[in-house]
Length: 147
Image (cartoon, rainbow, N blue to C red; front, side, top):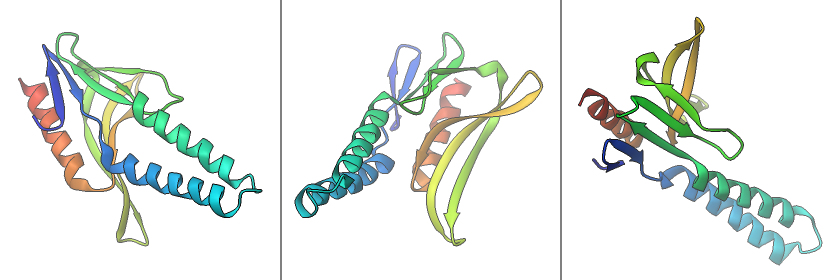
């Protein structure tokens, strides 16, 4: 298991640095440039605020698969609560690629598909800039569920 840490029958997804490190680094660079080049502007404070929110969002997000409780537990952002998806409701997974101009991939998201009260719903499990890490996470999720 490369992407998950096992503690008993609970599997926790390791932090995925591939999306957040470049994003936080970019906004941190803009913050530093704001303080150095345009100190009288409020731009630097906006960039510092965005950098802080992105960093906090990175640290509070998690995905756990609890095989004792037979459920997924996830929190994908700073402002969303913990979402629980029983494995019995799970219908499958989708990998969603967001492309710009038809060929530049800007985001790849792993979604869990399920139905609740007759409505089809999706739950975001992981995201990255590239498909290969997402496919690796999906393969490990299949291994965990099939045990």
